[in-house]
Length: 391
Image 1 (cartoon, rainbow, N blue to C red):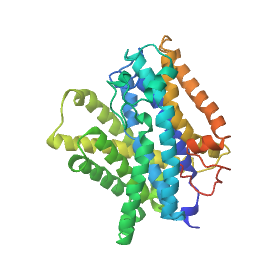
Image 2 (image 1 turned 180 degrees about the vertical axis):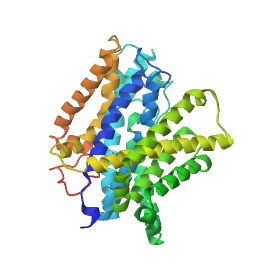
Image 3 (image 1 turned 90 degrees about the vertical axis):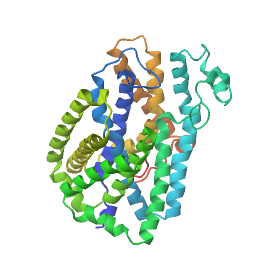
Image 4 (image 1 turned 60 degrees about the vertical axis):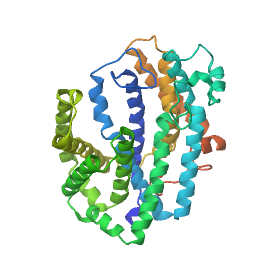
């Protein structure tokens, strides 16, 4: 059987798990000390930085990598024009709805908490929000429009751009008949050789090629991992090796993170790295990043490549949960701002998941809401292949 038609349930489960983890991560942003966020709780912790650093090294790269795999599958079974049309519909409609409806409450809470807004109702705020020249927002001019920004929905925007870049690059390389050479290493090389090449290659790209600013670097890294996912796709030997060596990569990941966090606290926070030390730093960062990604992919391939009655439901729910979760988190944290350091985060987590679950039950029953939240209108797709409803 063509491996491109076999369902990869492990990647479905990973997609669900990564987005569930994102909710916990954004709750953590309320409480981690010294890191900026739209709203910060009074209960902040320095030690939480260690856990946040552990997650943010690989969570977004892994998500873009899974999206790259999904794109390769989607292009295998559809036309390029249909790919562009569906990608645009399911990414841009939720994005536009999100920035004008879902995201504004986050700005309302941010401005209230910083004392930059009079004590007005949300209705009055939103009326002012629609006026792009309103004086309330004189200090909030950054965004895609003055004071109007994507916030956590930046991933949807970038995924559309990355998808179009990848399609154009794929078309050029396909026309030049170079794609088989790019697939070849994932088909034939030992997995540790691939690991070394990926670590060294991306480290040197960041040192010499990627933009120096943080936003440019984030975009370059996201697109790089998307391309890596596209190339590794459904190559059986690669995935079998990942499953076989999953424990080795997990050990390497733990050791690499131990070195990385020691370096972070012992040197990085108080010094600027340049020259050869910066190259070594990037090599350490990408060793840690790829080791965790390979360990996670390997364990998922070995343990999670099986279906479950809940999986299709969860796959459908991921996108609405992602769109709504940060607004729930910020609004709830502000409403519960007088609660203590234990019950406040626990309650925010419980109510965020509950709010997303209730909202999804409403969304999936309405054709209009399904369109606005990027879901297929009509009956859910059957489990014939990995879903491509990124993010």
